[in-house]
Amino acid sequence: METGGNSLPSGPDGVKRKVLYFYDPEVGNYYYGQGHPMKPHRIRMTHALLAHYGLLQHMQVHKPVPARDRDLCRFHADDYVNFLHNVTPETQQDQLRQLKRFNVGEDCPVFDGLFSFCQTYAGGSIGGAVKLNHGFCDIAINWAGGLHHAKKCEASGFCYVNDIVLAILELLKQHQRVLYVDIDIHHGDGVEEAFYTTDRVMTVSFHKFGDYFPGTGDIRDIGYSKGKYYSLNVPLDDGIDDEGYHYLFKPIISKVMEVFRPGAVVLQCGADSLSGDRLGCFNLSIKGHAECVKFMRSFNVPLLLLGGGGYTIRNVARCWCYETGVALGVEVDDKMPQHEYYEYFGPDYTLHVSPSNMENKNSRQLLLEIRNKLLGNLSKLEHAPSVQFQERQPDTELTEADEDQDDGDERWNSDSDMDIDEDRKLIIPSRVKREVIEPETKDPVCSMGVDVSPMPIDVPTVKVE
Image (cartoon, one colour):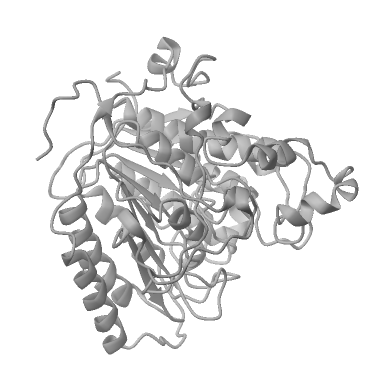
């Protein structure tokens, strides 16, 4: 598949990247409700910018195959998925007990088409992982994904289904180690919690910490059991700017790539860390935010780019458009082309916006202490973890039509391995706070760790270095 999707050369490596982009035209129609800050319409605005900047012609554009119930149940509890599938605005008053149990209500409301929305954004992330696993692209993009707060048994922080965990589980079929990096202003708690006790997934989250949702992400939370030192938390204060952010991001990520050596990377690009976000309190420019994408791209490792938070929607669209250009290696003009949402971007009608003059509460001494602490933790991982070998589980199959055509409506067939054996259902850990604290058990069904199987290969006698 040599035609379409080839990006322009970028950076000192000059290597083209084959980029695949997932978009469903219906995604912008979902509506959380009046006054709710989460607006899926921002995805449609992003797509319009991509179209009018001419970026779509540089990518393969695919409509995601909706994730099925059993795909979602690779991570989520059956009864929770069944609830999401069946609840409607009209019937929710008859299910008050379940609404409370699954934390569905105010932050995570029931709205028309809720389950279809979950299927769509999860399908794009899983589909991106499948495409990366089969080598059909170097970078896969799903701006509708990145909903990092959802737990095995409950919704949280505007997130219902954790598409990131599902995508990582798909990547683990092919790769011994997967790195997750989160640049949303909120801690990536759902993803960290899911993989807190394994050494096959490293999670690195840069976030506001201290009297801020979701309240987790202390620098002392480092993972547990086999996962000790495989969770990295970078707690930041209000007003962090581009310079301070990359004073931490680049050396930490460089060390992570050196010692962990991931086979694939998932980057959650939550845009609520931008200056001027409706719910955020950081002071990053769009170029500063996108520098994280550029830096991850430079390692030439299969890369899945996902959306996430972002509540000043004109800036979300600006950011993800620019970051798509970064993924492609295409420099986009600051002057915005005329398009159907042009009026959102006045009075300047430019792609970039200037950071504010807000106070930066992150002193250089504080940043130095954080950097040294986390680099010290990483130094305790002398080399990438060894992986026990076993018989390989089958890959998710792709149809020939999907491989050769741009619409890509068939990602896997009905006999796909997206099912998981009944005796290997995945269960999530409760949040473990540091090594010394016992796990809390809020719900016995939801209180244990994800079963991340050893990496399977075809020949069980191959030795690990």
